[in-house]
Length: 210
Image 1: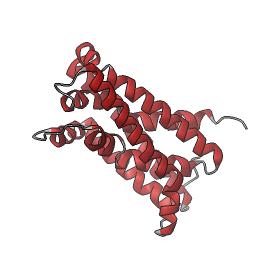
Image 2: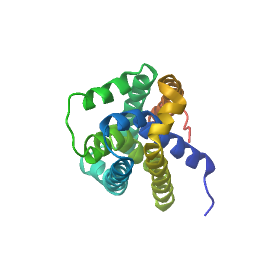
Image 3: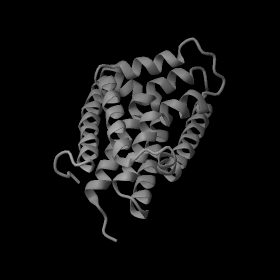
Image 4: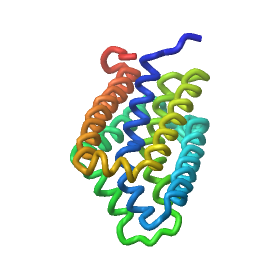
């Protein structure tokens, strides 16, 4: 079985941009304020494990749920592309970060690992849609294994980023995080448009793009 490098890169960029480890780091610091480094590591690990479980469930059963609801993969690809494009706009204009911060303000949460960290900050609508879309792009074992592997790598990177978030915040600063978020938003916007074009091509509108 030959590896599809272009597909792997698309999956990696999509999952990394949607999950956004660097963007979650400052919110993780706010949610775990007052915790010891050991407690923060435990919360980070628990959040990544729970989010990973949710994403794996959608990887295996997401397409079956769509079929049960009578939704075709091209239709979901178009809808998912639009959803990801809206997420990209939020990243470009800082609305996504503001909404995430609003979820954390005024809440006394003893253990934020499941809510709001794992769900919906990590395993939210964007990452769930991305999982289903990417597997739909390459049905079969190769697509499933590739996407699950890429998702695992992204969650490992997220876990390491969260554990080092206090250092990251000091090194990069808020302006640095804002710049990185906007760059990732541009990448996500381009990928979202590609998903929509692929969905339209499957319906016979324009040439097939992949």
